[in-house]
Image (spheres, rainbow, N blue to C red):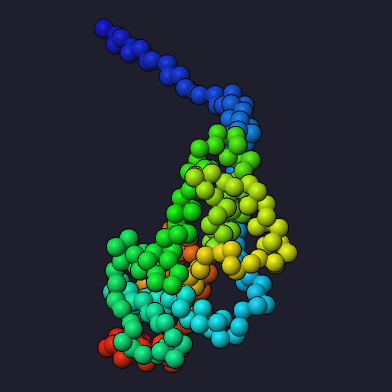
Length: 244
């Protein structure tokens, strides 16, 4: 008896045609290009010194000393700050104080500085933020440059450009003109703090980033990252701090 031949199922090749997807991807790319807002470039603002021909030389030195704080970043996340009232006292180790990170530590020391309280600037910035956030989205985009310019004014000590959570347009225009002509009157400005940030060789990069964030939170416009010098060595070693 002849064997019955087994029927073989014909295999079909399955092929997915992705050609229409090309047109769809092009439409999606075009859509996102036209509808997405690109990130704006970040610029560093320079705070220029005010023109003050009437201030005596000794008053300038006194003001500079009183309104300056030096911050040391050490190992193991340790943080120190140094404040003196007289230029002659600089280098005395007893004025060095250890603090912690956050609002109850270094931020509190900056906010409540005796001769240049940062709290005044922070309050003015909060009013500026309230004014800007209350604007409709369309007006926020149009007033973005005005906000940044007003923030520079506040960091320089022109806190009266805002009042009652509103931008004083007349005062803003007046200060803007003075800044461009370098004719600002220091009597119209509140004292501002200058911060020297000095990381030790054994400090961490994260601590440096954190202290720079504190400068923005505290609305400090004058700060510099500097190296440890001989005077700093005396201050630190005089408090038993190891400097590598």
